[in-house]
Amino acid sequence: MKSQTIIVFIVLLFNNLGISTAQPAPPDYSDLKYWAASPHKADPGDQVPAFLKDEKQDLSADVFFIYPTIYDNESDTASANAWLNDQKVNTEIDNTTILLQASVFNGSCRVFAPRYRQANMEVLYKLGTSPATAALDLAYSDLKIAFEYYLKNENKGRPIVIAGHSQGALHAVRLLQEFFDGKPLQKQLVCAYIPGFQIKKEDFKTIPASEKPGQTGCFAGWRSYLKGEMPKKVEPEKDNSICVNPLTWNTSTEWASPALHKGIMLGFENIVPNTLSAGIEPATKLLWVDVPEPLKAALENKKDLHVYDINLFWMNIRENVKRRIDAYLKQ
Image (cartoon, rainbow, N blue to C red; front, side):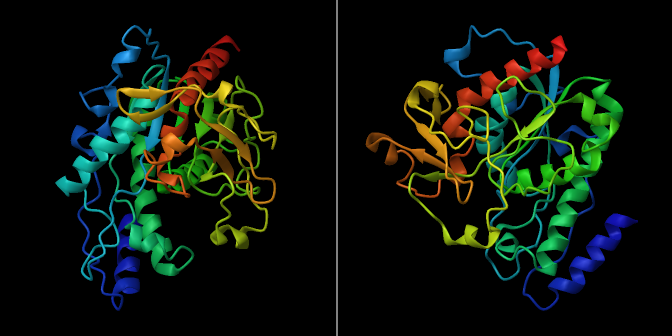
């Protein structure tokens, strides 16, 4: 009933915006086709790069991964939310974010990544407006149902990692607030990896930011920009952000050297270690990344490194997930 109310609300809001409001039925998460990644089927989230073929997997925990915005339809008749039967979008999700992002957790976790009716990128440019809020509410309603299905049918008391990037991080914050922050489930939280979206100082009441690599029950998030870049869009935030440096896993603004960099993933079989240094810019809490000249072209000479938030620190994340799970299990 609540999902139907959200859909009606979206119809009213988008009637005069030239955006289609037609929506398919909500997903049935007992059907594996509604999971982009699941331990019960073969999917790109299972893939392990050849250079890690001798790595010992220990899947003692689960990761609930929320992928970023892939649906970007600019046409006048585009839907405010992705259709779950859009094969083009699903294929792009599987071959990019599931393969290159969700797979970072598969050395230590069973990977669960639900398909959801994510908000259109065009809607996200209007954050704070009623239409954007409605579209994001619909997307989150799917994720909430998926997480409840996971808890009921899969978790069985196992340690949980929450992860998401960009729009996925936005939804992950809401999921953490509703299910973990000050709730009994918080005791099962290993860590939340939520890069690519602003984390406000007031977002969590009892879940702390990571201050050391082996800490558990915490979160780590960052927004990556080329060193020296100061985007105007962060000015309204007025220093209301938290950033964790994925080279040091703390909130210190002290610059971290390339010696701490375990490897950037430029392609699924191509990891380049000891190439990046990074530091938290004190005023904005952005993560500034110093990229050597030869690598700038590989990153399309971007100053906003948002799409690479996970790939820049792929091996650091992979090793850190294992370290935190080990620490959790020893507690």
